[in-house]
Length: 170
Image 1: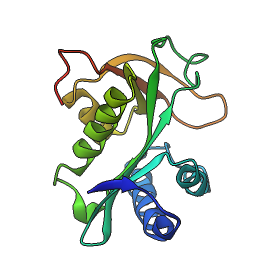
Image 2: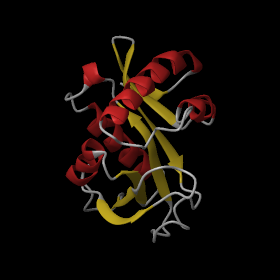
Image 3: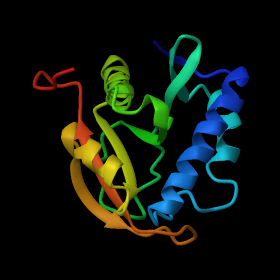
Image 4: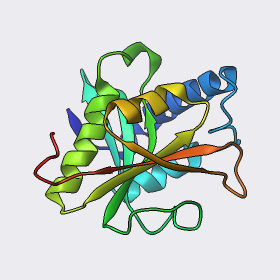
């Protein structure tokens, strides 16, 4: 079941993030190599009601942050000007992988977008994050370019997907 994250979920979410950070480090992926990123973002993600968890048996089996686009990418890469959601911080603990949870969370974001008359879902991931790059492509996201953050390590691939049209399949 997918629901809004709550304050009492933070510890389990941070454990999942820390596990992912170790895995990224082992894979030479600098995406979350900054000391307290993305950990420090989680309380405000929950407060803003942007963080959604996938829960079964009272355990968080994954989460995603879905934010309304405020022009975050515009200075970095050519983007759609349509109303958009941006996907951030998707994480699935190792023991819950290969169950389709990441796909369910992204499909949920697409359904939420459609319901709220949002036309495009956007996201990015580091070039070396093969799992996330493959997932974006598998789910029909189109690679629109690459960019480098001025103050953050790595090179990122930017994706977009149009949603909410008659041709979109949920």
